[in-house]
Every structure is written in C-alpha cells, then in structure tokens.
Image 1 (cartoon, rainbow, N blue to C red):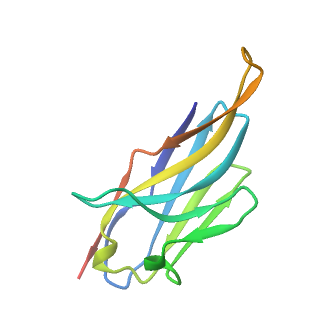
Image 2 (image 1 turned 45 degrees about the horizontal axis):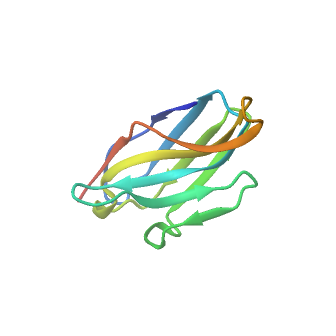
Length: 125
C-alpha cells in the first residue's frame, strides 16, 4: 500500500500563492498518475490537476493558467503551485496517487489508488 503525506495548506489573501506537496511512500510496483482534488462542504470531490508518469498534465478549467502541477519521481512527490488564488479556491485539497502492485499469489498486476489526509486552503477576500 502507498501512504501519502500532504503539506503546504494554509490561509492566504486573494491574489496570493501557496504550494502544496504530497510525498508517497510504501510498497508498490509503479506509481502512475499523481494529482490533486478538492472538496467543499456539501459537494463532491473535484479534480483540480493531475500529472501522468510521463509528465502529461490535465487541469480543471477553473484553475487553468493559475495552478501548475509537477512531480519529482526521484522522491515520489507531487506538487501543486497555486497562484492568483481566489476565495472560490477555498477548499480541502486532497492528493491522489494511482499505482500498481504485483500480486504474487495470482501472478498479476493490480491497480490501486491512495488518498492523502487532506489539507485546508483558505483564501480571504
């Protein structure tokens, strides 16, 4: 299983910046897609930005041009640089990692995912 530890959330004023980090550790065959989702009270978790193992990125329309997702494969860490933050960006941000493990008993490759504990981002107006 892969465990995720997030850091970097906090309180910032409108127009400010924050950088979130998420470090993955544990037992796995390969880490594939890494990324970020966010959730506000009463709403479902929504994709913010993800990055594939090869570096391809996907962004939600509401963050394009303001947020940048990146990863350091050497330390299994994904980042979210958030610029020009707006009050509507206030949410709990969750790291998500998709990975594979080798199932020795069945000699197969199993796909799994893990979620971080969530970090609060609050943008004041």
